[in-house]
Length: 84
Image (cartoon, rainbow, N blue to C red):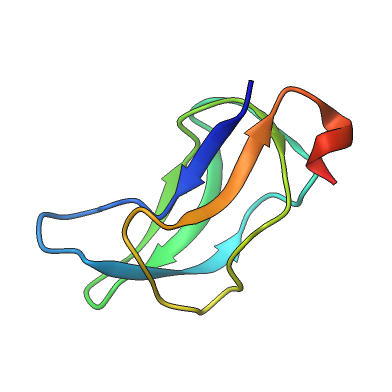
């Protein structure tokens, strides 16, 4: 089963944000609630925890690129071979 990691909406008025740092690398196992990446908005920088568990797949958006809320950033998968 795959789980989508998307740009979260961290506030009511947030429309876009950028990932400044991934705290895990593709292929790493991620548990639910584990710190996953840092997001920067026009107001804050905040650590985002994983809402699912699995192996982190390829990262779809480069660090520092602003994207709209809901943009696919990466996927979590149960199968380690799909995470590379």
